[in-house]
Length: 559
Image (cartoon, rainbow, N blue to C red; front, side):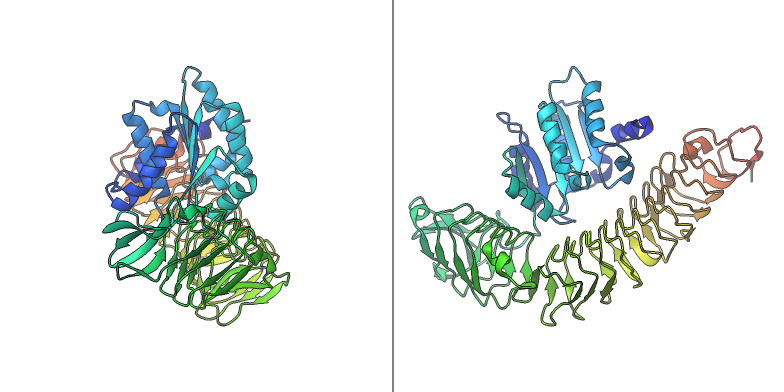
């Protein structure tokens, strides 16, 4: 049965509250957003839009901008449903039931809008989208995902035609589309000149009829260094292409769905291969060169014969793109300098040894459910790195655990971490002790049901739902802010001291029925902390202007 207070809380969420100070005038943001709004506001077809890309790429900002634009168009907030899966409280409810109730509550609305942050955290997220499409075709959907391979590859495998992906990557010369000095045509190629270099943008009408291409090394005396994002996307007629040694970057989806391409020689100067650059180039079996590659993006070679033919380690240049072996104990080759995103994801490895100076991208060990030990000195742990690694033992002192970094790591018992970002340790059911905390993000320790020992007296901020469903017994906090439902359902909590916190969210002690002793400062009434009158509170010490008269409380307005 749906818990009404959670649904009411979801309906009260306003994404603008989180992003109101964001500068929307940034040119890179504006260029990407132009594509987003063209797809989403298409009047002729109800496109479902997914913003896919690693963390930090302003996906939530784009959803927020859609929210603002809807309001400018006169759409009522009541016709918009915002589901933020960085707030783990939402996972208490079935998303199908949430949407069904939302639709039922707005029977007179011809169009409704569903905005979802981190949609991949919905169990069977694709089935959920199909449900909405098949049962509520007047609902328009925009969502984000920070685990792009699981989006790209699902869309490719299903051939989904109602969902449009907007690829978001870190800005570089291969995908900045607004800095152009000259546009022109050379032989069969379209090109741009920017900052003294040439990028190949695509093919002319005649070029699209050709099966072989030789990219020039220079045009107009400028070196050709970039194959731009999408330059040869879906050019099924191409079976061979020569890339000059001058090229250093191959952009996002540059050769995706080039299903006739069988082999390619990558130049020594090549450093960067973008997201799903060769995804769906199904006949591509032979790749040579590329000895100095430093970056390979998400799903870059998914669906190619090349990846099928690799041994245990699919390596290009200095990057381990994918581990394909069956071994449980793995030693990554010493000459590997970078582990590509999700390079070990969903494998059965138990122990892995990494080179000393290796760089980890996001999600490297995502859902490695049997992983116990990583031999490496990791202090900054990227987003989703150990998501779902239920057997992981980890003893390193952590400076930053990015969002969802240790989500569902059931075997962790003690952690020393300075910055715990959104949901970084959520659902770590064996976690007993956390120390060294300075910043606690939204849902950081949600449902750590055995976590009793925390020291948050000097924590800078405590995010919403951050310690919900834990068994902390006492809290003493003097943060700058405490988010909504921060300590919800802490059934063992008996003593609370909150001093001088300028911003306190709603019901931070909701369902904390065992609290018997409390000391607070400020002007918020005690009911604000609990969401109702706290029946078990017998001792209240107040430093400030509030005065709550509770029967049975000794010294209700004491100093």
